[in-house]
Length: 87
Image (tube, rainbow, N blue to C red; front, side, top):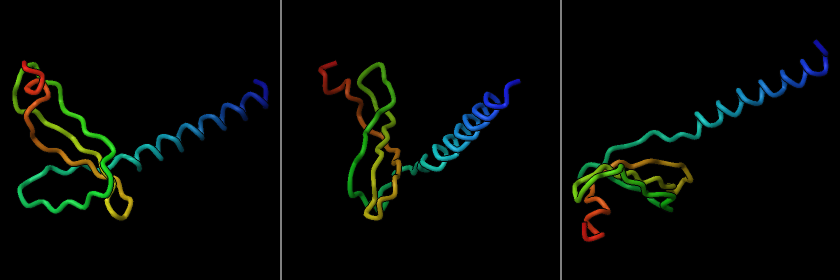
């Protein structure tokens, strides 16, 4: 095996490991909302809801930044978007 190819493969393998480690660190822990939960929301990044088949209560997830710049995910229940579409 060519030494140059082995070195390039080793570098790519190391970069892949570092990328996976960085992605694992970036994944924020999720928190379930309860009445009275203190929220420190500076900026909402995304709001997603689990798919539903009808007008019903579904799980929703809000990803946001707090005043310290930390990313959080808040899980809560809401009426699905299908209810707003006349469904």
